Length: 354
Ligand code: OGA
Ligand code: NI
Image 1 (tube, protein in one colour):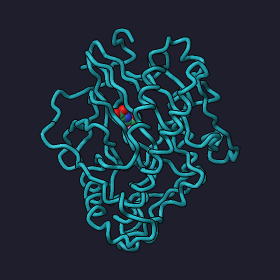
Image 2 (cartoon, helix red, strand yellow):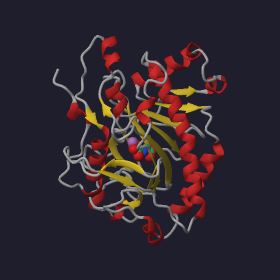
Image 3 (tube, protein in one colour):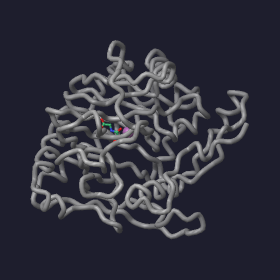
């Protein structure tokens, strides 16, 4: 990518502050007890881990996991093919470019209007096809099938991506169960929402940036789905906003670990017991950076609302109006692509005045 021109310059809100606290980071949680835990074992054996996860979700909405059981060769393979793919000439990458019909595949921000992030991306869904609403309009019931696009000039790409996605999906379900337990719910309480999941994986490439103080790899945002499982390389650049003091804190790369963050849906399900944290990515003058988030999302027909039994347990009233996940997802995809007249929808639009 070339100079940082006007299209990439982030407004004051988005501009990196120079001060980033590095001293204390997000919690690091060791998942090795899961390796000896069998289906049907008494979940009380996980009490220590569940408490750690609960505290991390409350204090940060973010944590890193080690000894997570995802085979490291799956990760190595997908990282290798991602690097190969992004190193191809633009015209090759454009053969799997996303367009108005298909939001999946490759896009680069340099040639995409209205996107200020300093990055290029490849997206694929876990389920192929994935069904989502065709339009954001509430009364339009039409559905649409999203299909992945794969580059045929890199034959090992597809297999590496699909196997990686299945490996990380398993970790995502384990974390979902731990989070459910940490809320005082049965372990499998949330699993049913993911039967026809709309989860996807994004390969991110952040090229070196000549003026890193003017641009961001990804501007500040919260993840809209349930949970994100992110692999980052050793370059670093992900900052998380710490809820209690508002400081941006750099997430220190730990080899072969995953960064987990609670998304907006868990915030709503938990009725604000857990909050999805703001985060952003800073870019680097010298080094390119690669990262791979897995966005764990429910089925399009799921109605997202505070879980009734939890609201009763908390002795509170629900803090959100219910919303349909598919419509939310489609609205986001459309507004990202064209910045249509569609507003960039946020969960606070569903917050009740109480
Ligand atoms: C994202 C994101 C972080 C990273 O894509 O939503 O927050 O480190 N990415 O790339
Ligand atoms: Ni994010």
